[in-house]
Image (cartoon, rainbow, N blue to C red):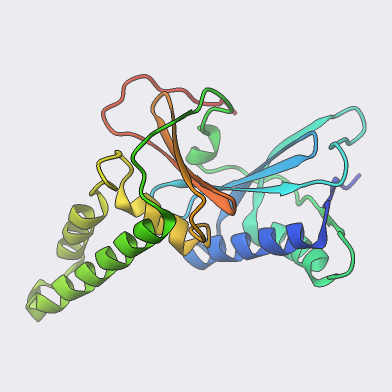
Length: 228
């Protein structure tokens, strides 16, 4: 029997489809982990270029249920899920439903998710416009420094070194790497000025009304994760 998700509003499917399309842009074979409980669906993905977990939620029209199951936790193909969600997004006048694809063998990251609770606000995060400006400046610096390299030095190892130097810098001393803010910008999350930086154990999470990115901090020993 096919498991179906019932979206609360037409816009929920459209926004989720846009997120899935961005993930697939970075990885054609991307997988996503779906967790649904109550009236909330959480979709986790990992764009490989940024080394963060991306999280997008959607509101459901009614508490999830499928037979005796009152929650959903499955890893599926992002492309197949996009096809299902896209059909709902195209039906602009109705909230629509989406079939959950068959489960796939999840990548390693899918077994280690951020904790569900215990998050505390981290002070010092600049405004959304300031964070966007910081990302734009970092992109411009990377391009300019690549242009300055002699042609024979424009090899992968040198580009990776430059990238690590620039993207590992932190945002205003908060501990959040610039690459995490870049990921949020690239995934369409970094819009407006409503954003928060949260921490829980070894995890940092940049949260906006449009989605979140999360990552484990280097050098923090106490890992707090959700098991498979």
